[in-house]
Image 1 (cartoon, rainbow, N blue to C red):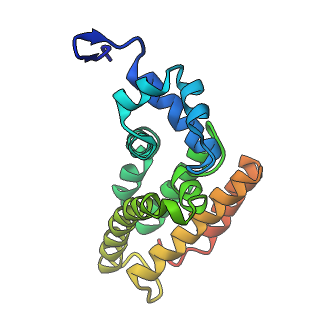
Image 2 (image 1 turned 90 degrees about the vertical axis):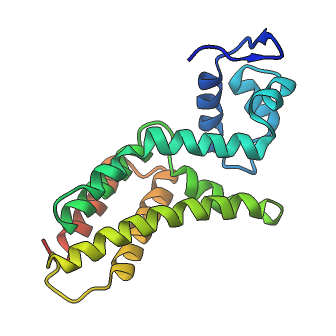
Length: 198
């Protein structure tokens, strides 16, 4: 990306690189624990530069979420395009594990929502709104799978989606506690072994 200009002066840093560095800080520390000092040191910029380029900490976090979703969550769309409910679940589970064990432990959205105190309820709500959008997309795909006869028992789209969400969150929390990738994959395999359909 070209370095963008502010009031005729070129910035002395690459905004994409700085945002990627901020993402790593938020990912490893969560929203509350990530101080402006942590962020500016990781990004290699001053506080005035951070404010000029990204706005305040909340605005920076939302831009980091955008980057996270575009780069780290591409597997979700691939999963939604899978031919059966079981392959949707398989791609989501293994994509989630590959994602959370690639750079930093845990899931940015889970970490942020769990570490936001009462003063940061707007951040928690923002993360939850994004999560709800993804949940609705998965639920719609599960409803289509039900309509297509993918399940061998009666299930509700919302219930099976919440079940998957609970597994994802559990995997993310365990990854954050240092559980190795191989063990997380066994959780996914067990989930698929119990999957009620094709």
